Image 1: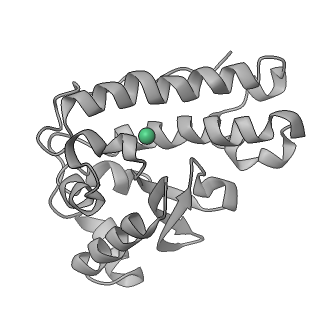
Image 2: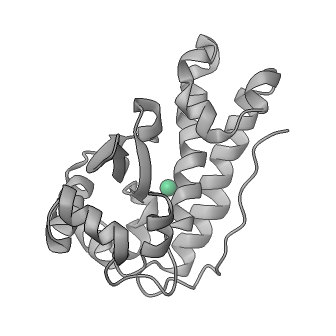
Length: 198
Ligand code: MN
């Protein structure tokens, strides 16, 4: 068994105008597919790794042979990160979380405005390419960011929401304005889905 591009539950234009259709199409069919292809190539002679779930693989990079560890870290990270990213967005997204997730944000981070400000700071403050995250650190919600395609799972954290801040995620529509992309993205976050991951 090898890793596969997961199917999208919405069309490329579903998140317009916040995420444009052309960016969605290239991002999903070229970038994410590329990570999947390169991950499969890296582990083509590693039966044991091929049979792992992607979460398990990324949580056990120390068990990956030295010669392919960087390729698995980068491309396995690309695969797990984008899989979570697509599922965290919806045409019916946006607004504010409700229920347990909102209570947890208030307890661990502050108001929803505090959360958005801190998350935006993590997203715009990440120099170069990377991701901003909402994670569970033990039983506490935290905001963090990672470089490249690193996933918090490799540091023992549980990601429940991630935002891709690589330029390929926003450059066609937002050019250098990463902050505008972050603001727009809040309009498509599927908070119900995020809450399910808690
Ligand atoms: Mn990406």
